[in-house]
Image 1 (cartoon, rainbow, N blue to C red):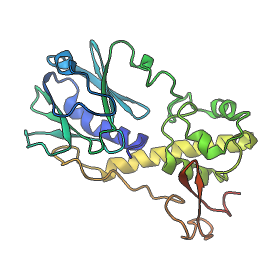
Image 2 (image 1 turned 30 degrees about the horizontal axis):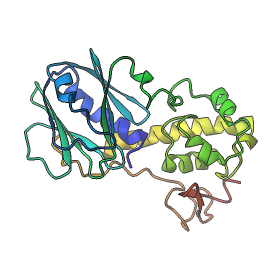
Image 3 (image 1 turned 135 degrees about the vertical axis):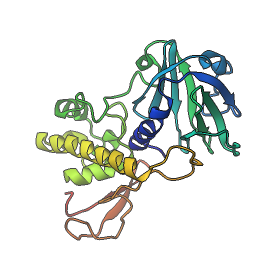
Image 4 (image 1 turned 90 degrees about the vertical axis):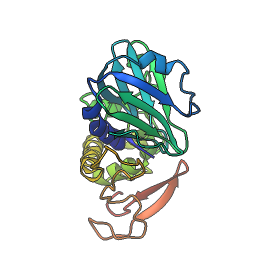
Length: 271
């Protein structure tokens, strides 16, 4: 499933080919995504200039003068820039054709993605309005996280995966951040000390930054790809390494279930 680093990598990869161009045509082959693509959307954006492409959490924001196209990749979605009108395959649901000779192709086998139109500030859209701060922004800091954790008795891993607390800390990044911060993922959130909260903020920032940098080098080609290649493999310390020796102390990595998700941790480093 694409998470924040994958979405940011996608944004960086496609934006140089799109920004400043006008939409010449929008071809919708399948409207039935997580929410139906609005039938009027092609008429709304054709002829208009794409001013810029930004990201909020896992949403990509295609900014036009008269509104914003909000795109979510869902569980299996990808965006690729094509230089030729290559024949679409079964799961290639949307093409946005630009006047610079490029076309943006949206592929989504599971159809859990979304393409929605919003007039006004995109931050006011119901999908974005209640989101927590971006993890790499100044607003995500020790004071914010300490306040968010106060009186929360849920396990710390579950709390940092809550998009109301901070966006973009998916299952892999939660396990990895807690390993780097040397914090037991089962600890009650409210029980963390001020020093541990500060370490966790740094660890979340470093983990996501490393993941974005890895994506930028591993997923090299957003142009004319078939859209089925993977994103990147983070050099994990804990995630997916059950029974393997910890890269720091050699203790076997353990796995447990939290909220129906697998959590990986080192019982020696994270205690």
